[in-house]
Image (cartoon, rainbow, N blue to C red; front, side):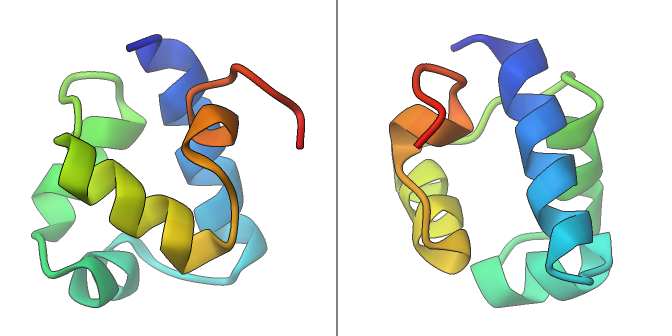
Length: 70
């Protein structure tokens, strides 16, 4: 998974939606430390979490991974 693209996209989407890391973590059922790790490019989400993130923001998994601009 292209970590940098995902990290940047996740943070951008979170901020655009006015969410803190803690708020997003609660919506996804994971910890804020995990969100921080994703945004810093230190951790990669499982497929299940990646799908939850995409659903949360109404985007595709490909968009989260930087494979498309749609």
